[in-house]
Image (tube, rainbow, N blue to C red; front, side):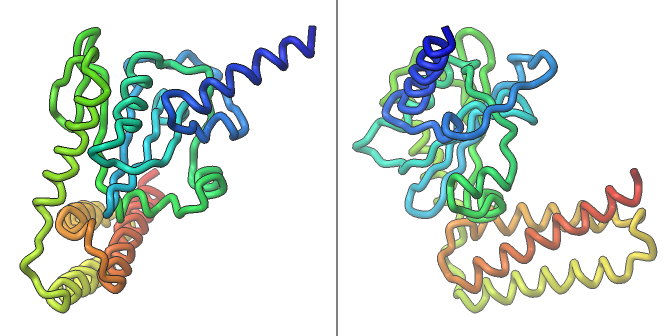
Length: 246
């Protein structure tokens, strides 16, 4: 009986690991189930797109648990990304489940978790109802073909790239980022109490989001380093404020 049960579990994991040609890395991770009833309405697919079309796909049951993690490349002549998204929309919730955080993400992907929020453009997919899902604000029918879903992802990716500032000299971008970092650090130092950092935290988040939108795909190493430093400052100020007011 025990051998049969293990065999069934292994077959299920194999199916989930290779569904639609995309590997589900969560199937190879330690499984953790929620000790509460997860609301299906909280399901979402977070996609992160980097320079060159690299894509990270994370299907989340809610804010605490994920059921799918895969890494691929978004390109016009390969529909595996569209197939993967369609599969997740039609088959969630999946039996795979883990609490995905920076430690186990980095261990299995061999990449830095924080980089998702600095060097990747985030596109969120949610289910609206039985008929539609929403991709970054666009309503799309859930019975759309894999190819169509892939095309829409590519279009959104291209739209994000087109908004990046490309007519600035690298030296100007570096200076702009460094000046913003200096400004926020000065605001933090001049703040009398950590519990009064809310306005600084709001401003830091606003500037971080604005500059990331402009330079997320920039490949200059100094620009990337400054973007990451800005993200770290933003996170640090927010954490200091939240610790003080809890």
